[in-house]
Image (cartoon, rainbow, N blue to C red; front, top):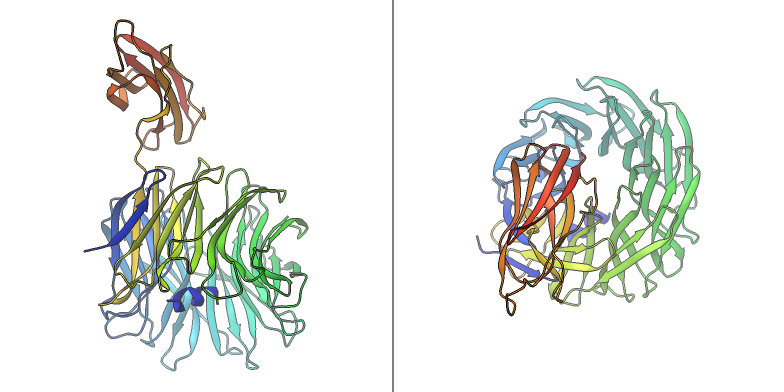
Length: 554
């Protein structure tokens, strides 16, 4: 329902950067299927080499909708494209994807047969985009099937979770376990009661191989509650947990992830008062015990709906979505918050675009420096939405905003944001073109690393400060200061060299070479392309030399 809402509200490029800091558009790639119709992205994943694979559904000549995977190199070139058109040649859709450490892709969704019956499909693609196997699933007792989420355990087994429709019109949860070779190793069906209807949104696995499912369930009173299930590796149901907001209403599960400390972190929209839906964040341990919960009701006491959630290495939780200021469509703002694992609010930020209309946060990503990247849509004017990408630092300060659309009267929505540890940010979503309808638009941004002055006063001493953090992976900050030299009048700049060497004295990176005026400066060093080890940073200015030892630990 949430994804449908995002869609329905819905070269020369209109791209604007509001530079509190700096951001550069490296490349833009748009995909338009051969039928020149509706092309919709589902998600995007990044491999270990910094390439991205975009998964979605495209309109091709001779078929209605095909499953698609498109791989882009870090430089923006198309590495390969892969398409799946089922036997029915009608409706094939990707609903979720998983990328393993070896570069294999696993896709789930549904495919229509020649009679128009929709069935769960799971595909495996190798790193070259070739389809290695396809598995279609729908037991005889059910008349429709939809794959909705996919994950893997530490042993390489693949888990597809979806819903299958019974003859009475209600849905059952089905979880399937496949081997790397595509063998069906097990399955589990779940209904709370014989008349209830359950629909999953997320499946994930912990380090022991246990399987967790987040779903909606309308077993009580005809409204949806939140439901969690835990299976052991043999598909024995270990526990089930139903929970909801404090008021009567249809609560909506959004997403479940596993945090670095092996806790289940959930985002949902729940009714806690008659006013409308609230943000909800939960942490459960693997025995189903509630560790913390946090709710947010916006100033409008109306619809506050999260769309994405993630965690950083310290188990802090980041949620973005939309918060309505008034009880009217068009007053939504992008609302993002950071809370710690104990439910302490660290910061919350609201962004209202210049169009003063509908603004949605739909995706969030965090880099290893704690910077937060929020993707969504912001209103240009008259409900014409464009891509919006915002960067907040770890304190919640907005550092920059960049926007994108191809045409003036746009209807564009970001679906996924990935911030790597190399200073690059990738976004993908759907972008309207008057000639080709919705296209899949993928963009790479970067933040230029340069010398930044941080003190206007003239220092008295020549200094190279110890980097922070140290050890680091892969980015660290280096501060230094250049004094006014004796005998030099005014603020004449002098040659400054800041270099990084390995333990054998080989130059591996020049961070600065050129003239700088007296002052204090800061530069970020990115060691993503270097192996772990000890390095030396040397500052040379007018025959004065300072060195520090820095440690890259991957």
